[in-house]
Image (cartoon, rainbow, N blue to C red; front, side, top):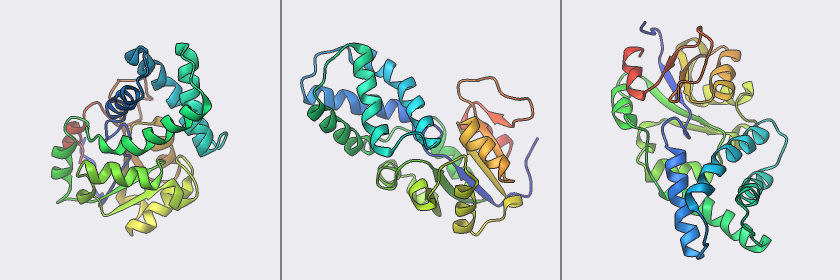
Length: 229
């Protein structure tokens, strides 16, 4: 069913438009090879994905700091794979990862096509829990920045999704009304429920077809948004 009466579309960035897992894997391989780290890179990345997801949830919930997020996820992944890394190298790897991550620019299939489709019809905006400098680099290097009128991140808003404050901040920046806005993201808790609790309609980008309540509007591929908007 087509969604009508919308003027502003808000997107999450990582895992929704920008392919975080693919870009992250490329970055890790680059820095591990640079430092001559002899281990199973594929296995490390396999372990890192759920660890990173859990650390971001802790960060989102205010349980850990930005520094604990950046170092803790790496330390835990190395621990699980059984590879010893000295603290000084760990800090170097964490810094290089953040520095080089935005240089990779793989997007989800259909991202540019759907943005080209939406751009003439709606004002487009980003709401991300990521950090300003990193997210700005990702958007610039992947040519996403030309599509979006505003980018709201948690640094600016002083809070993270699903907190209502970041959505309110983004609405004000975009000069948009809740009833005329819609949020699209991959995280049912932060993006979808956060938006709904704030009074904004939402679409769940459910690439992996995770179980979701029947009332949740969802797509499994970005181009399916053409059927809704």
